[in-house]
Picture (tube, one colour):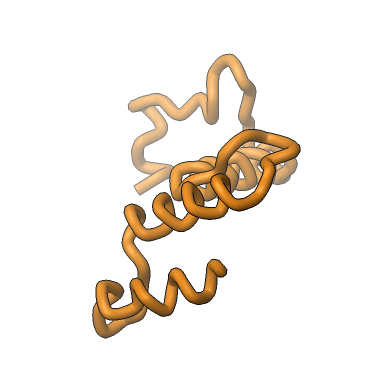
Length: 85
């Protein structure tokens, strides 16, 4: 089902065969209608991006020499600009 949908959308993907966000959202919507979502709600392209961002934050929290808190983030301030550029 999903592969058939993506095969139909392939001409819209362009030369790089990268589907647009709207294609992934349409695929997620189609799958949600066909299959019962048991855990976590309906997925879309933004869900994947949020998962990547969350994984990056978790990795940063575990990295030696870095500070990260849920309250203050990475605590990067203007005075430290030279360190990050």
